[in-house]
Length: 243
Image (spheres, rainbow, N blue to C red):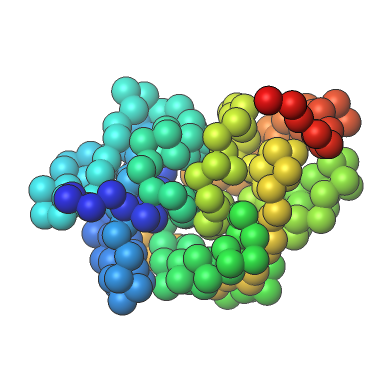
């Protein structure tokens, strides 16, 4: 690329070989009409299938497609964080690689950044079209528990379809499971976070790697850690300076 990207689109990939080409095509279809310089960063989280080979082919065909490969499976949070660290854009967009987050909604997320520093997608209204009752129920329970314990009002904390300015994560202390709490962590640094409704597609290829255990029980310790961080956060405003 001869022009530094304005937007970096980041997606973690774990055994998603069949979804990668449609994903890249959909991202290009969404962003090309905006006439913005952009890059697509796909992070292979230790896949067991031919995800890396598919990424190599996509990278050879389009220099805007960049890829990272973990030596082993490290989890969604690690893959998202590695992607944000590799990104060169002023605005970062994160989404899942399974096409349940439709890239066609990216322009709406970018437009909403006029009024915020971080825009989070909410699938609450659209989930009935794409998920089983078990996934809908587990998500609803998990979001209720997170908000009750953390004092938050995020309606869909598990949705990683987001757009934010890169400075929002410049000082965030990321950890395993942090992707679920990123809006709260960004708020702690004083940035404005809003939600907008996004569409939600049924998974057509491959299989989900996250279930009820991952959504609720595994996140319990992280939830109380984030609650503690909120109560101990430094809050001050400099009134005057000299020299």
